[in-house]
Image: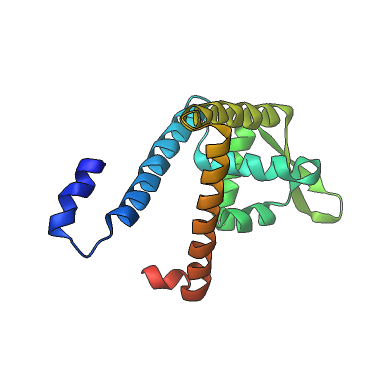
Length: 168
């Protein structure tokens, strides 16, 4: 990374090497953490999208949500969510139940196997992420969290100001 930043110093003098170093290191960590997560989920025969659905159910009261809620929060069409739920149901990680408040409706519920799959995969990934963070002591982790929080707040403000179309 340092060699790359040094190499662009002459060819792109308008770039601030400190800013580029921050961005490139965040991107590099993000790629590695994503790859680790994909490995963690693959070892458990899960996809990222399936894990996210299990997580939404895990965080909900009673481990239940409507398919519509899940689709909206996963930013999927109802058809795509149905396919995802079919796969999770075939794996016995969720079950579909009649909605007690709407006889035409369905509720999606996490099974005991689904709870275990979500908790085990999350714990395994957390252990991998802890290995990366072990390069820092407790105070450094707090400092880095504070600094990254500030960067995220600016990024979120820019998103709100310019909208998703700005990057297209």
